[in-house]
Amino acid sequence: GGPSAPPPADLAALPVCDPGQLGVASAGAGTPGADGTVYGSFKIANVSGADCTVSSNGTVGFTALGAADPLKINVIQHTAGDAAPGLPDPSQEPGTVLLKPSMAYEVQFAWVPDNTCPTVAPSPTPTPSPDTGTSTGGSTGESSGQSGTDTQSLREDGSSADGSIAVMHTPETGAPTAETKIDNACAGTIYRTGVLPTS
Image 1 (cartoon, one colour):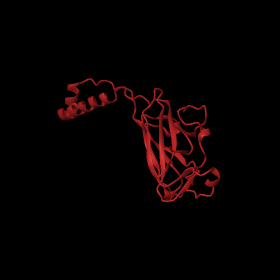
Image 2 (tube, rainbow, N blue to C red):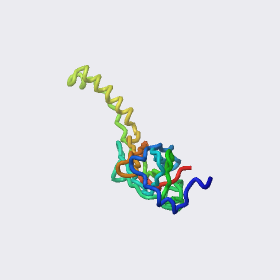
Image 3 (cartoon, rainbow, N blue to C red):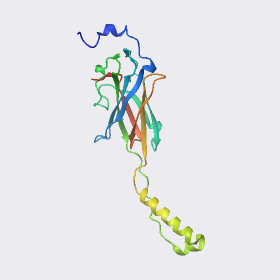
Image 4 (cartoon, rainbow, N blue to C red):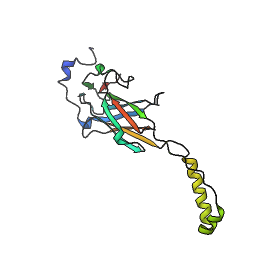
């Protein structure tokens, strides 16, 4: 038996993977580092019975959820020396990846936050005034309103607004999209790699 991977010259002779040959193998993100950076990856597998190649980097996009601000989030191609040193060096990207049946390629990404999610201002502690409440709203209205205000002040007492982003990778038009979610993300940059062979 010879080498399992053909030399680069033979890659050009193999067909490019059709959208229907590709399926999502996995999508996930790790836990934030000390500086808030989150690394993650998408793996896209050849779900057909024939060899094919992938040379397109596909797209990486996002959806801003909750307090996340889409105008303050960017997606850029990873380069050497940028703010995501945990991603593979771009010189390691082969440009074209051979996918035998059930083999997968990988696109890695890093979320580098610009700052934390905005802090919700603490609610002032309500001052009970039973006389006024009773004369204007009745006892039932007073008690329900009071308990609602207490709950709100506990929930919003200086906590961070709830913001997150869904990061997505689509290999090509018509292919399935891989998606993973990053919590406590409101503003920052997504650095992405090209296609990488999986070991």
